[in-house]
Length: 433
Ligand SMILES: *Cc1c(COP(=O)(O)O)cnc(C)c1O
Image 1 (spheres, protein in one colour):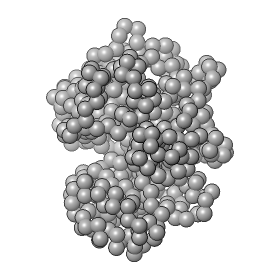
Image 2 (cartoon, protein in one colour; image 1 turned 30 degrees about the vertical axis):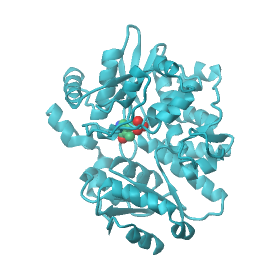
Image 3 (cartoon, protein in one colour; image 1 turned 45 degrees about the horizontal axis):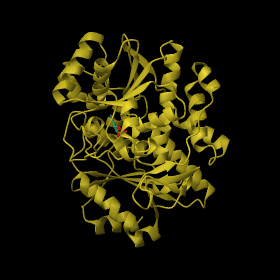
Image 4 (cartoon, helix red, strand yellow; image 1 turned 180 degrees about the horizontal axis):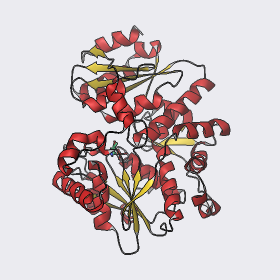
């Protein structure tokens, strides 16, 4: 499969290049040249298949031309070492729980897949050690670090702002050891990101070591997210509730919903989609007005969706031939304030006993308000509520149980390297490795 850039000014890339580079030369996002339709027979019996079987069929359509079948199968099965179950919340509303992976958020699926695909390419190549640099304000660092943990041939450096990520988050990437190095930067998130960018542009450093990013726009991180939408459809079909299915995705950078839309283009019979936003309403406004006007993000309770210029908008725009009409007839929007998020979490808990995290709350509410007669809705629970324990406890007046794998991180021994925000220090550190 060939990949082109959404900006249209970069050379066509093969899968390996798209994965290793992440972003095209013209700073556009890579798009697969074709999207393969899955045959009708696949959907006819999909409910009899396991999550892994379904995922492999989807993976084969995306990556089968470029990755040998047995290897791809192993990558898919290793990635999905946990389930993404569909759980009933009430009447016609179901949740797709995406928090059963190692770091309790949906980013685990993409990060684990990318790590294994990158390893595959390294083994085919010259076995040169690849170094992944990732700047994080919390969640991305943990998903990437855990996704790559123990993967031979790859070393990960996670840069994070000292004292500015929660203890729970910090424990998920500073206690791992092995091929993961956490770097505590005396600065803010933007300083971490600037260090990573400077490193990619530094010639001496690039000669010394092979550097790559594991950014969420990477095709190997975002496409595999389609797996769990096919599986959700299968599980709803088994319940006899898949005919008028609405998929609702709490969205920030729009990578997650974009992978669902790719699934739809492959023939996945979802009737329509809802992108649920917090107060960052750029996409919502686009749907209303046809104008895409990025702005600075505002801080909300659902902070993983605090994005003022969603990077995957470019992919959605490209996928539908830049047609506002096509986009707005398939996808509707919703936007909620922090007060509405709190109210929804309280109301859902009181009425159903289900504990929403602040991101999932946007999805649940959008279905509650937007479902029509005869439709069934599935919203993504993108993270486990225990990841936001203090917030959730104070809102619902409860005591969210901390899953054992999260508690285990918190018992671990923190190991980190402290650095200034000065690039020369970071560079000297990497050169010494
Ligand atoms: C990253 C994230 C989102 C947003 O996903 P996008 O793919 O960026 O739209 C939503 N919820 C949680 C918990 C996340 O970590």
